[in-house]
Length: 161
Image 1 (spheres, rainbow, N blue to C red):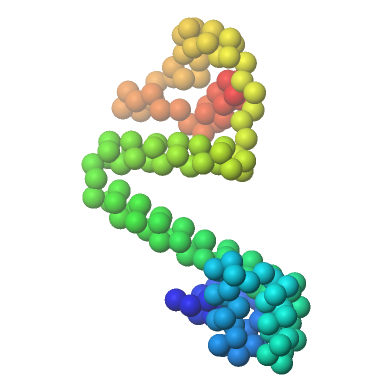
Image 2: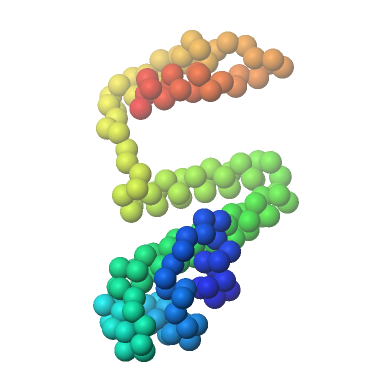
């Protein structure tokens, strides 16, 4: 799928002056930006040299939106592959895989700075782990299962994190 098809298929259809340029010129500019052989100012100068007028800000807006759409398309394809892979696995393997995926996502977020961690009082956490389970976790659930509900999880998260 080329950049025009991708941008025209986007859910949020913004109007870009860039799409008013001839397709060959659009392709040349996008290829130059993708290959890092062309900067935004140079791209604007190229457009002007070909007899059209478009600022480097307009080119930057289009290229930014294009990169977002590309990432979204790649993410959707990746999630589709993950779902297909989990569909054929036993529940325990699927759960292990989801936990690994969540951990990998968290570590990736920590590495690039999009996710932060609150400071943890480690001695308090260790001491609380030595004590018996929190009273809200010991209530009997149907069928003898001891599964916490959302409110219990929220209280535990506030207490220990």
